[in-house]
Image (cartoon, rainbow, N blue to C red; front, side, top):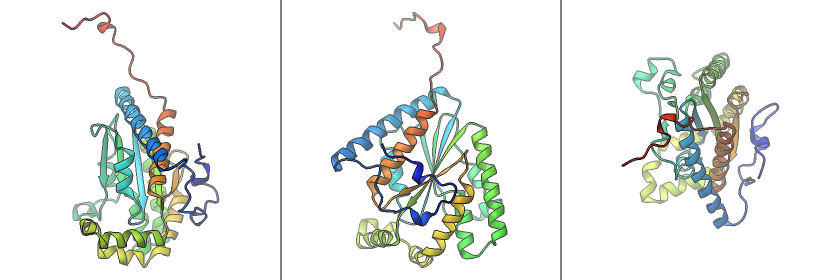
Length: 268
């Protein structure tokens, strides 16, 4: 099995040194890869059952990435065999009027995972150290304060029983162009396209730098970042599924001990 070490953010990490075309976690032919992903999805379902049965901890998966990087597709495939009762997904859009009237973390804290639950954030609080930075709405000093606040917020989550897994889905500009064009050319997918996507695309380099700064500033021992090469959709899915399975195995989840009152009971 490939190592996650190269893709874990830390030290002198540079986003530009990660090739979006890398596929280290995909082995064998297409059928073998599909079989592995399905097996991982089944194991995730079993691990989620244990997480729920244990009733003490929870898991938060944060998915970030440029437009078309595959956040929706990740959820669809990685959790394809997991009971919907055990996985909840929240997509973070532009803040509403009500949300803008409060601090930027308010809407995030409202949707943290419940005990025994896997929670997936499609975009997240990191939007507030990406978009405002690129658009010039906050200065470097405010961005630095927000990095520290985010680290404290995630420390609070981990210290109260939440395991945090953060994945940045890394695609290149050419891959994004092809995916945006496919949405335009496919009537059934045009609803996913927005003219705003083209405006954001003109600021590609600025967003890459904003990601670089945010990843390095907020990859901690309690909530590390992993950069996922995502030009290959199948590799993206397999890598994230492997990371989740590895993380949950390390949690050493166990169901509660047998109830002595049920010993020998016969249902008639």
